[in-house]
Length: 613
Image 1 (spheres, rainbow, N blue to C red):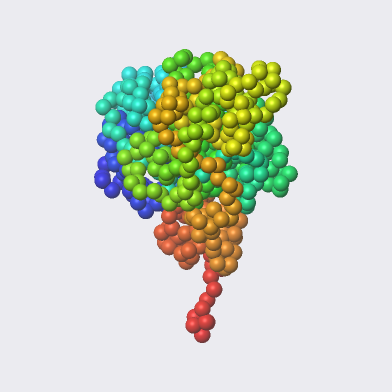
Image 2: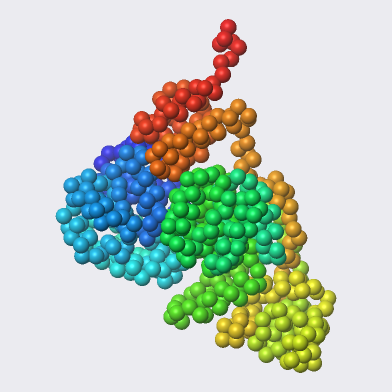
């Protein structure tokens, strides 16, 4: 293989002028036959790292993925640029599956996407025994590790691939894996002395923001006012919340669609297709939605409830801004989220060791929510990112609005003492009532008005106390005990606070920050506001893209990304050669769509007075 071959394929097939980051080195390693482990953030270009070797090597590249949506999206996109690709999964009829298998046997496919549970079935292995396999790419490789955020039993059998394809390079890819998870991937997949590439976890175009939950609907509405007409995802923890929020957003004038595992399959598919193919659609979902979604122009991901861990949060927020344009990761969380997620861990059927892992990950996410230093630096440090910036990013809520801190040592001592004296069996609400001297039926039932801690916290409001308890849980000074029905219990770390050996500084819950003020202090889509004549051209290009996408039965971004349309608007190409210079325009798309887009540009090209004379 010539050294310039990968770049030639990138330019001619995909329409990009140069590789990003370590893509070229990864492709060279794979083409040289090395097992390879790649850690690269969502939107960083992982798929190119196995798609280009598939075009350069002789034979069929197998892509193992648990994500049906990703299979379909990538195959559609590859077919659009002239690459022969297909998938095998449960959505195909038997006749369609047979057609794919026949094409593979005839050597007509470059890439075949397949689910892990199907790959090692006897009939599938029989198919591959008659096909030359040049590469096995294992996407979402963190699924093999109990330390990952989405462990899947089916992935454990993939270690057999070494014996099934002994001379075939294997490429494991994931967006989220700390050092322990990376080691687990290498071990569980039995990779042979893999070359490792860590691209870095930073997504500089994403603005991270976390708020204490007070009135979730009101807070969400304020946030959405900065994203009128944008596509986005709103995550909720329960199906009931999904339905409620989606219905309420529709009442507020938004196009909002629910998505969760309890919906009929056809409804889920319809809602996903509308999100992919229409502009301005908001999907309100549980975590059942989003994995494998390649939609590049998701402008925000909002969490109305706390996710399970940092890996899940990073994966979910990574669905925003895949096109590199500005996007938001906005989250609310409250005391009840902490209690509920702790209970879910305790009630799970996982082994005790796995529960300990999940508790540890939840604790670290809570600590990140309450940081008083740069949120991006803390996020990158969690993933042991060697490229983490040494200076604050200036592009997160903590950097833009640095939180004040206050000496909460005495209130924390009161809170912990009250938890202890009430028997470590009650939730925060009751303990706060005792602290504030609220004489109600429950307090009287347990005679807690007679405790020495009754009324010693009247100087703080209920909201302030809930903030204290939330942060004590986040810092590990309290735990919610499922065996005591979510009752708060002390931890070994509590002693240092009670004895006065540790000074505790907490952050007050911020007053409401005006959404427009936040928008004005950071990079937003307003930086891309176009002059009127350019905006008219952009809208006409989008309209044409929509028509072409509809005719081809693919999402609009499969024709061209917004970033490509912006390039066309900026440079106004006059002919095919100039259009080919725009990032994202390759030979196949130039042939399919070039003249149509050039015609639209020509209708907007005004001659100057000098040219007229």
